[in-house]
Length: 113
Image 1 (cartoon, rainbow, N blue to C red):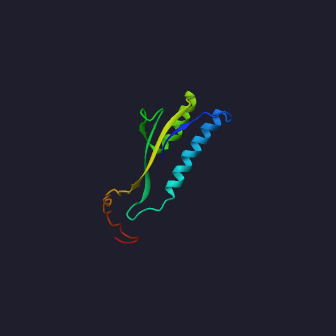
Image 2 (image 1 turned 120 degrees about the vertical axis):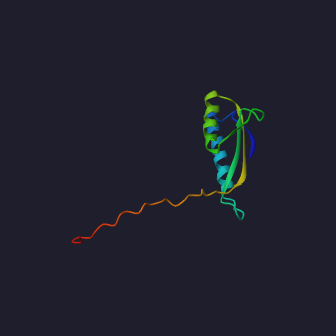
Image 3 (image 1 turned 60 degrees about the vertical axis):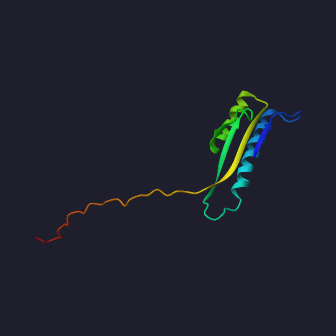
């Protein structure tokens, strides 16, 4: 999704347009996550850019997009640019060594000398 979203409409109020933009972004992400994973892929990851215009767009994390749209609302801008591109993600398991448990001294049983 590479899109400049307009937040102006002659009949729809500004806060509803902002909510609609957030909903559209969330809906796109959900739709992309439902796609079938190829072999050897663990999950869908996303490359995201966000800005007032396409030229000003900066790389952001997927979880920050909602906050960026809220910031646009506070500044009362009429449009913004969002880019969300799906990519394959593979989890890498960290190499963890088994913890070394020191041997405890053997205790004598009850009545043993």
